[in-house]
View 1 (tube, rainbow, N blue to C red):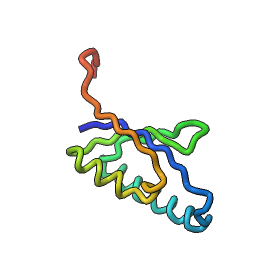
View 2: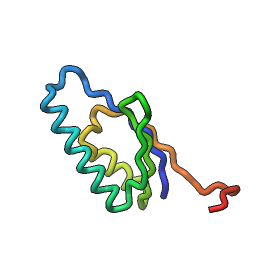
View 3: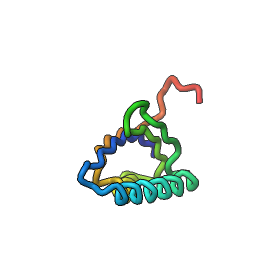
View 4: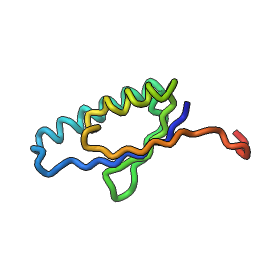
Length: 92
């Protein structure tokens, strides 16, 4: 199943810089592992924001929830999930 996921990160100013940086490093490693495995199919930065749009290709809703809730930055994110279906006019 394909999903378009919009993630906006808002790390509170009260979080110590070293904790924020360590969490960001864990987030990068986690996301790159999922990208290598094919479940995190695409990731695109939103220009001028600490946000991204990503495409996930996962088995089901539960797997997507498992992935998203496992993100190290999850507690500081606003996430919007849009399930995707093939469009009838697509030539692919």
